[in-house]
Image (cartoon, rainbow, N blue to C red; front, top):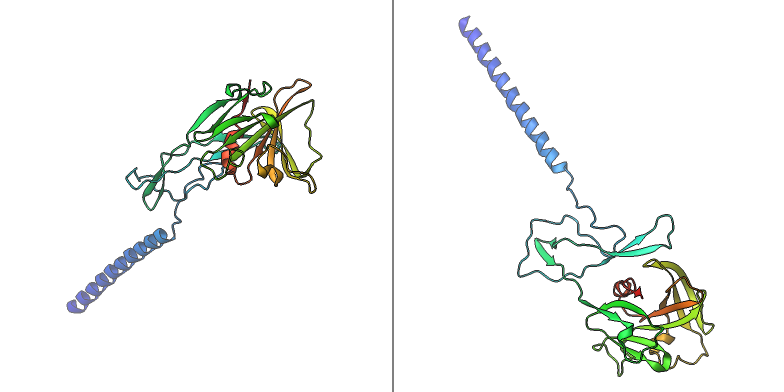
Length: 261
């Protein structure tokens, strides 16, 4: 009888141990499943309404090394939610590096220099503004068309007009004006450095002669941005024409650095 009782006791103990092991195994499996189902965390975007895509899952532990490549910082376009036409620009401060496969890209700003229209020899005194331009650009006054030509000496072309990147003219009026010699595909009201502005998408009309003493692209479809310099009536309106293949971000940085004296 004692032997039977002892055997039952041993079997009961073995059963309890087995249940305990099973329970532990199930808990471990549950924890393992939880780890597998846990969604990876992603980085928040680096900016809102910015002209670049923020990297996701950026490994912030990466460090600068010999394999780093230059990364040009982009501009953030700030839109007034109450007035969509009220647009301003700020230059987003990027982190020290952005990472991909534990390799980082060093942020290097595009070098610029300050230009003052008053420094150009023989310039029309109605040109009274300052602007930041890429370090490799040059400027000249084109007397025959009363304009300032910003050109890239390294661009292709036989002369400075063909190398033109931004071509600036002006007119005196009390309100924004347009030419009857061009098609206007669109116009958009803007605010640039607290000054009223309008951006036009234009092209010279068929049958009209090419504009003399101006870049050839001025007769093609391109954008121009007119800025009212003061609240006086009449006042000077500046017309900034952008070369069609000029990078939009580069022009945006240019136009939002304009300051009137």
